[in-house]
Length: 249
Image 1 (spheres, rainbow, N blue to C red):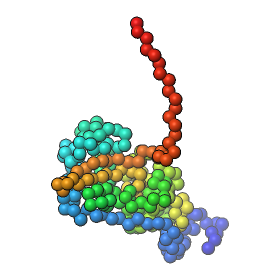
Image 2 (image 1 turned 90 degrees about the vertical axis):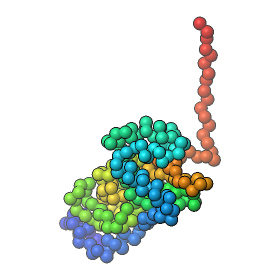
Image 3 (image 1 turned 60 degrees about the horizontal axis):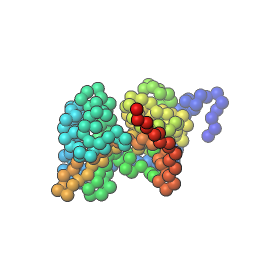
């Protein structure tokens, strides 16, 4: 079906049959939501306490759930005290609360019986896709918009699709819920999605570990920080350094 020259792209897309829109969507990979936390009652209870503390904007119970070696991002120290300093969690205006609200609204999966991670967007994201170049639709029938505004024309809908971004994200990835992201879609080569409807596999993820006594502890909260991870097999040589001799006065 060729586009008539007198029709705008938006008008032409609106005339496409619904079957054509849905057929083109099938070309995109999908990542359905998953939450395995109910398999372990103690883990489920811990996650509920985290959600409750985040909803109350109360950092003290959060810090009590952390290991002493809790990792704060990948390069911002360890432990509850470092967490407190980095996030300034004593303030209800801290960006931490939106991060936790979004992250812990999503399910997670087990790596092993004693290691669990949130979110499933990170744990089950296809390894052959760029984590900075894609986002995942979190629910059914998410609208793709012709323009980055709420009342823009709707071009198509996606359900749990992995959407390529027009411009890859830059780490550290922290996307406010009220922004728009430009994405690519077979039925709408240029479209926008509201950021609260999607999540990035490079955004924040949390890990939990069960000790030999069966107690779950929170061990990290971090997002991807390197656009190009180091090559561990061919490390770059360190630049030569010179040492100054100190003189006594």
